[in-house]
Image (cartoon, rainbow, N blue to C red; front, side, top):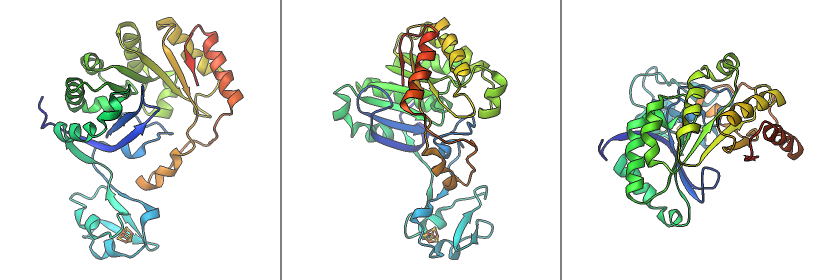
Length: 303
Ligand code: SF4
């Protein structure tokens, strides 16, 4: 592993306060092996770099269309429709666009380049903050992730990872010595329902969760995003909490309210957002989910 190793990053969010202790810089690594129907970061699902069109930045000037190569895009209703699977560079379109409405969804960084970016926020790291690697699924770029974690630790920067754990367990084990916190999802205990909504079975995830809860010596938070019509029922939350309580009753379990903003990102990547019901839960409903989790024997549940 070297600091010249490259990774694909689709966003770097500064001053994040929900991705670990203190004020964090969150790095979103591109690519995910799952396809959750409610994914909050659809631009992070594909592992390859893709062109995106930001409708609200577009002035419909047609410069992209004038500079397009054959098969690269269509011009429809005074707007570009990009052929994402077109083989070749989209630089000509991006350079032609005067407003930045057309851009690539990510960029590659060497470890060294990323560390230079991360060190710009070092002042926050001194007061309990740090760097969180999220995604996509960060462990899918495991060599790059591991190199970054090692570099952060060497620089005295606290680290965290947000993962769905549908990954090779050895990658998690290898990263643990360089991690100070880990956040992992647990979305459903029924494997066939899990597959219908996320594209994958849950056996590997549960196996990794069991291992993590038994062996990790760092703070672990397990999260369930509450999705109406999928897992936001008393029965499902009770079954997840029961499983976690059996593994480790003291683990921090966090119930995440439904994110209503996620559907807004889907047009950018020309995908349809699928869940039929879209509403956040009120305080009383969230409290009642928390009570259900506590009743299963967990003693550190937050909403
Ligand atoms: S060049 Fe940019 S602003 Fe003009 S139509 Fe194309 S995407 Fe829109």
